[in-house]
Length: 400
Image (tube, rainbow, N blue to C red; front, side, top):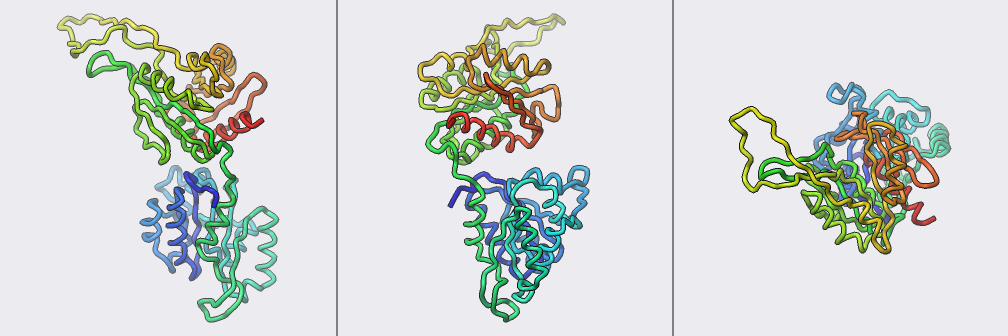
């Protein structure tokens, strides 16, 4: 089975007796390492409780089209952006009709209208309903619109009839669903990533740092794992849990990050420097806490330059494919190209941190990928999706 690890899967549950199997589908998806959110129709709640699916998925179950608890009441847009793929199981005849005709009168159908990725359906209904010419017409429309149809299977149904219409078993559905995701492009490759800020101590309680949250670097680590690579993540202090399967190396200072990078980079095929490394550190470190003077006078702190990690890696023999970031507030492309040349990089990823929607600590990003031959814009999306596109771009460069 191809990997579903670290994928965001939205499971739609509609109102049929087969909804009881949705619990097992959630369990199976979680075992693959997926993150699962469930959307239920009102009729589905008559067959299985939201609490059951919430407990199994670990996430709130959604059912309201206009939910005041979500930002601006636009929950369907948020969920459509979050998901990597949508699976509707069971998909009733009514649901098939809605999706085939483009209706959006409930949360699930609205999400499907707003979603730009793959949607898979596992039909479940009475054998007579499945054979009906209108259902057949709806299925053909869905297939023409690139929906994936899994089943149905044949056998005895809840009503006592025998024939086509049974929802496939959860393991059959998961097996087919996993085929949506390609085998990793970077299998057997080693990716080294730096993330987060560094802290340059002034005394035991004070330090110089920056606003970096580490979200982009950690998203890149997830995307690297999904690509099949072995990922080493060297991280400054952040409040993010590392993806399962990553080799995490925690550091604090720029010097510690430099030492860790130079140790691990020798075995790396790709080095992505997404950390916001402090360019300078205090010239002198006080072992004792600096006391505030009784007099109201200014205190000056002398600074000295830290070692340039990217530049150092670019100078080693048999260097890896080198990727840097340019966080700029003006002249984005111009400054990024200068850094691309000066640091000896293969690729630079430029982003405008003056824009709060895509700057430090934001959940979304918009970046320009620049090498010596071309420029490629990744428009504003959640950082996980941006990271996946960056990794895909890097894999294409390595394999070209």
